[in-house]
Image (cartoon, rainbow, N blue to C red; front, side):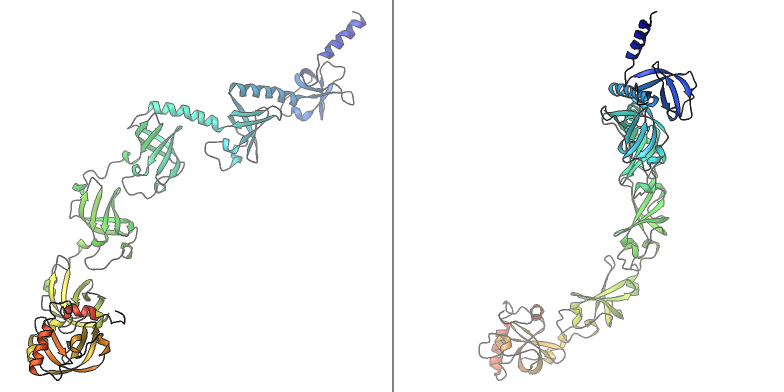
Length: 557
């Protein structure tokens, strides 16, 4: 072979070596800092030793390297084993991406917004793509190997974005289909509590989320699902309903236990005494658990026969153990009515024995209303003195005109209504009705003296001896026309008048100032004129008149 031919062969060999290509080389020497590699070129190349950190190499081994430069300033070939591997891996990654396959990788480190993963090349895993539920601590993933889906590749920047979440979701979708095909209503399954809301619990059933509604968690009262379960807890539940089209599964927990409402009437007949624990207090009553899963309601009205209990919380506390009596059961609505006061004798049962009609009492005024005064006979039991039973003679507009709260009053029992728990009392009944002997005290034509007590638009009321009022009608004030009562007379004035009418039935005494000097005949005429007022709207009896008299007359009215 001629020298020219050898030269041509060497040249041809050199032509096959292109910068940026992957070539085969043989290890010539292993030094502390570099590894010398022969690629069949006129000079060998040096590769930094750290590129072989994880490999056991020996002189003579054949390796693939990336030819970066045929010659550097020192005439050496520039080679890289890492870059060769990177280029090969990149091409492999691009191929997997095109085919929609999965790639394995090891999590290297935590970076801003996610994790860096080695899949042969460096790739980024965003935090939102790590798992279905965003993890709290990303460090727990470092050093672990997972399968990923490649969601994005940028050839120019050599960027790769991964997703582990999509892999999990795909697996769950497959598991979900298998689950839906294999289960039926009534089946018992095991799941893990995944999420808790106010209305129930979502349970992970090997890729399928099932809803355990709060009403299907317990036969008893449950204010919130967290009272019974926690996140991550394993639960055995029963399939209540499967909707394969909508991929929904309804679950039940209480269905795995005996229904305590079966034969409830047999276990708790009406009238039976029971023990229970207060579970909840509301404005209208207290809920009491008498066995697991069975609660009854004690209405606020069933707490005491006599005590005025505004709120159940005034006498009961949550967790308190109490005795009660079963008052009624509605099995369909799962309601039991309980009572506490039924444990004691109703003091109204023998109220007529303790306070027979005619009994005189002396007790304090507990409260005043527009229509009467409530008098406390004993704790929780009041009698009422109606405003009309305060006085025989005085026309009382409000009980406060005669009584005040806390004052001891003398009264007599007038009537008892057990059914409605009412006792009627009277003060005036302790005295003789002065109107029964009024004829002996006042006669038409008598001259009387008194003080003006009230003014009304139609006349003035004069307080006479014996706490009896007489009315001077506006027409009886003066011979002249009177436009306003106050033009002639005012409250507190002492007056002298003639009696022109005594009406025992209507309890009215008619007075006249203008008739002071009248003859008997004239007085009889005025009496007839006063009597004529009866059917008119000017005067409809003192009872009615006094309703208007309580309002002081004002100019312009």
